[in-house]
Image (tube, rainbow, N blue to C red; front, side):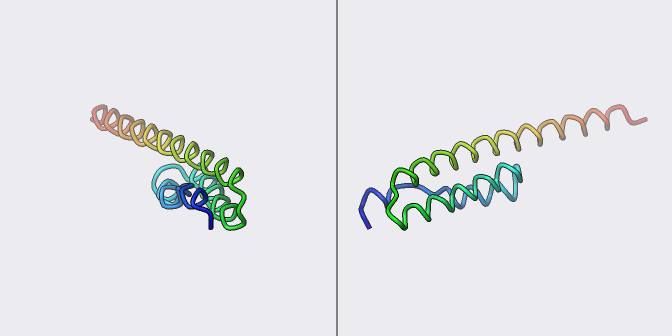
Length: 86
């Protein structure tokens, strides 16, 4: 394997974390692109691996942000409802 192929990150662990803990739809998409990185790297397609790696990273960032926003909104709604409870 060419040294340039070994340095392309797959973001597989982050994709699994994102899928399970943050945002399921974005996590699934990121997981698919992470697996595409591995497949493209194994056949020596560095361009496709790099492109899939960037897409996986972007999807993971978006999933974590959306997940964090959802959690914050949920907490705020819960706190507001608790304050208004007689």
